[in-house]
Structure formats: structure tokens, C-alpha cells
Image (cartoon, rainbow, N blue to C red; front, side, top):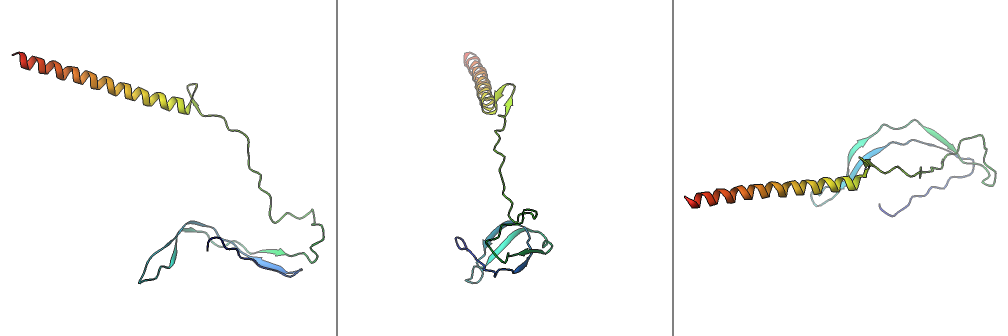
Length: 127
């Protein structure tokens, strides 16, 4: 269900056991007899081992700094990556040069072919 959220409220001091599993693929519908149930196509992992989360009894307490956080913060690596270069040219410049070279070579081949065709035609009409 897109756009909806699911919320759980646990009492202070509660312990929650949970497991997760990964699913890589896509969800789609198949019309069968006027119904369109949802299907998952892809790969599914095994269930993880059971993990336990303890809800603090007093939410105003400072968290214990010796325990790892349950939701570690992800900091993306924003260092600039070097530009791809080939023979001192950027990848775009190099690709553009190849395309222009192929076009020029194609035109040269077409010109030579046309000249030979014209020369053959002139020889065949002179005799």
C-alpha cells in the first residue's frame, strides 16, 4: 500500500523480538478470473537470527553510551571522484572524437565508392 504507514506503540520496559529477510525483485499483478492478486518475482533470503530490542522504562533517561545504537547514522562519502579520461581527453571528448572519426571514414568510403561507380558508368557509356 503506497503512501501508508504502520505504527506500533510499545509500553516502557517492553522487549521486542524481530527477524528480517531481504527481498530483491518486483511486485506485479496478474489478472485471474476477474481478480488481480499481487505476486512477488525475485529472490528471497532466509530469515535472520532473532534480535531483541528493549524499550527503555523511562524515555527521559540518557542512552547508555557503552551500547551500540540501534539506528546507526549513515554518512555518504561525498568526496569528488576523478573524471574519467582517455589519452588526456574527458570520456565525452574521446567518445565524440570516435563518433566524428567514424562519420568521416564512412563519408570517405562512400565518396570513393561513388567515384568508382561514376568512372565505371562513364567507361560503359563510351564504348
